[in-house]
Image 1 (cartoon, rainbow, N blue to C red):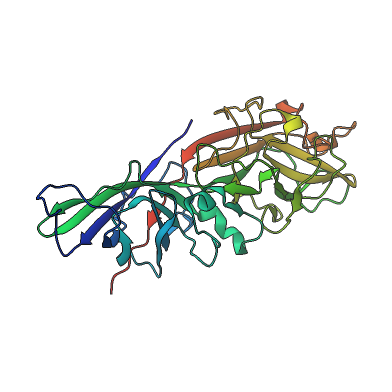
Image 2: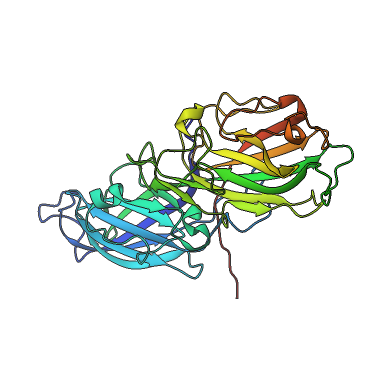
Length: 363
C-alpha cells in the first residue's frame, strides 16, 4: 500500500514587467523570464507509535529541480543549514514540474540536465557515508505548475508531498530465556550479533516503484553458503547492517535502513533480520523474514519492505540456551530459510509511518 506524507508547501512568486498579454487576456505567455521562491513549511509534528528518539527524521536541507514542459532543466537550487526557503530562482513561465529531494544536494545527485535523467537516477545505500541516502525524502508537484497574473506579478503554487525513499528497521531483543549466560564457555547459546540480510541496496528516487531493473542487496554478514543467498549483486557491510550484542544487555534498540524490496518468497531474497549466536562452536541464527509467509505473534508484512515505513521488530527468545540435539540452542543453521523452531522465539512487528520533520532553528 502506498502511503504519502503531507510534508511541504511550495510557494512560487513570479514577477514580470507586465501581468497579461497586450490584448488584455489572462493567458500567461510561455517562456517569459520569472523568479521563483520556494518555502518549506513546518509539517505537523507527529511521531509514529514506537518510533525511536533519533534525529533520522530531521530534514536539514533540500534541493529543488524545476523542469520545463519539454523536460529540459529550467533551474535548480539548494537550501542548506536548516534554511526553509530559497528565493529568486530564475525560471520561465514554461516551467511545469518541481521535484524536491531533501537531505541531499547537487553535489550528491549529479549529471541531471533533464527530467528523464532525474527519473532514471539510482541512489546507492552503500556508497554514502553513514547511509545518508537512507534519509533522502522526495516529492513533486501533483499537477503542472500554472501561473496567474496578480497585482503586476505572476504567481504560482503547488503542494509537495514527500516520501522517504528508504525504510527503517528497528530491532529490540527481549530475554525470556532461563539460565542464559552471555559469558558461558560450556557450549551453551551465546548471542553475538544483530544483522540485516538482503537489504535493498539501490533505489530510484521517483516513481510508483523505486526498485531498479537490476536489483542489488547489502548484507550485514558474509556467508554465500546459505541456500537462498542472492546469486549476484551483493555487498557485504558488517558496519552499517550489523551490531554486536553487548553481554547480558537487552536494553539496546538497533536501527538499520534498507531500500524497497518486493520479494515475497525465500528464493527471491526478502529482507531478513536475524540474531546471530554461537552454540558449541557453531553459528546459530534466529531469523525474521520481512515477507508475507513469516509468522508473527502480532502484526504482519503483506508485500515486502516498502519505502517510508518503520518496521519495528521485537524478538522474544524463549529457548533453553543449553538445548542440544542439533538444535543449536533453539536457533537455525540457515537464516535465509524460514524458521521452523517458532515455538522457541516470538516475533512481534508494528509497521508505522516514518515521518520527516523539518529542522527548527531560532537565534
